[in-house]
Length: 355
Image (cartoon, rainbow, N blue to C red):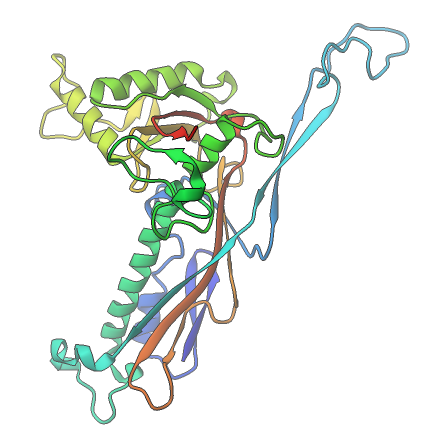
């Protein structure tokens, strides 16, 4: 049996059955954040959240007033925000889900004849490279799920999401993406919110809600988003446009087809608009673009909270039972996603709150 823990962004393996160093070197290359959103540096990860983590934001109202001999806290004030700090809170509350797989090592022996072990065929006697391959496939599949769920999951699934998608497009909260609210669900709820908690940190700026049918529509949407982008964050180096590959491909072709071309047809156009990076991400749904301050640092406007049900057994590999040839992989996880300052996010999306 082996177990694993996270150290920084890498996985370290606690070896209980004499795992070969060859396997450990391979496994150490795996990161818990192996998805596009993390690889492109768009999300800050907060680990070790067992129950609930507060994301506080503070804003200072107007503090300038007339010079008087004895000032008062209310003098010169014209609003409730005058001369005081306003503190808002948003939360990360990771929800449980599990990765589980059973397999029989004997099923694979014919494919790796060079590595067939002598004696009893058990998982730890397989060639280390084979073990690493099987684990890599497991981790890649988990990361594929997480990469999509960050954007399109909804707590309770599609029926609870109450988000209407354009015809033929990705459903919010579809399938197993049901354990926590993803970015799109958070944004749509915030834009349509009436309650104080959902509106904490301001409301996202909706620049448009039409379908992005071609590259010209994508360019028009990005320009509208730029004009509505709060002036105070325009020069932020982490301000980026995030969109799906369908939108980027349409925009790329549109640029290449212009009479005055930005680049040769054989080349990909620059991933830039108004000097800001355009980042196509697997997982962002169709007809959707998000503009915001996204990074791996604590100043990112997008956070993910993660935890593990048992810190000493993040990844567990063992025989199913004493009299069985079957082995299993098991990983129990907790995860949640939230935006920190909604008032600094600009979005164009054809996804709408279900009426």
